[in-house]
Image (cartoon, rainbow, N blue to C red; front, side):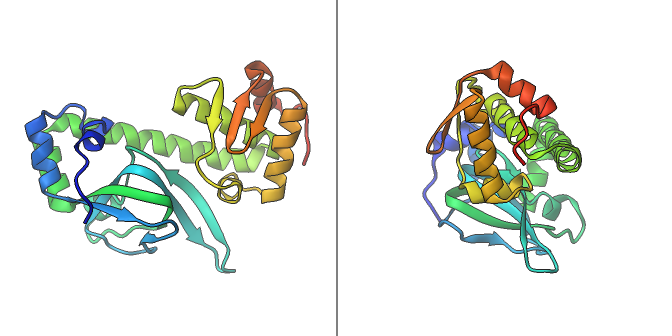
Amino acid sequence: MASLDWAQCRALTLFASLSDAALKETISRGQIVQFADRQVLFEENTHIGGMYIVLSGVVKMTRVTQEGREIVIHLVRHGKFVGEGSVFLRGGTIALCGHAVGKVKALFLPSSAILHLLAAYPEVAVQMLTSLSKRLRMFSHKIVSEGQYNAMQRVASYLLHRCRIQKNNEMVWLDTSREVLANLLGLARETLSRQLGALAEAGAIRVQGRRVYIVDGDRLACMAKSGCKRAD
């Protein structure tokens, strides 16, 4: 069990409506846990009896195909939660496997603490439903993207999405390896690198390590919409 980081918990959007006293009570019902890079938080189809709220780091949610290939379904970052199926479904299990990408710190709250929290503070339930609705919209977009968009459109759309999430129209920080990102977008790593190169050649972005600078946002948006410079 890791030491409590009050500032990180206080900054969580999910708990924004709670008083300090209510937040301290909530945290006291759970525990702060840490995971090393690539450590497994939970396996597929397991019941963890609660849910994790990510305080720092990234959790990679994956499924393994019958052929043994790992597919990245989505990434859970700061302030987001995972494991709600173990809370709200009777005998519920988590359909995905969770891996730490880099070091991860999380607040684990058992089901009893979550249910008590939602009963006492309905505004937290509204915030949780909002987050789940956004996740559902994201999954819908991912399905459409992989079925209809070419590689360039997927990469350009992802960069624009991260701009909105990070509230920074000038630079996107890639907080995972290219291998993980390519898997998330349904691409080969080499294809991702080729598309980043094509976007840079077109003058839409400039890549410096894990930093992607947005040079021409309008051109990037055009490529996300029409894939007007294909490099598949």
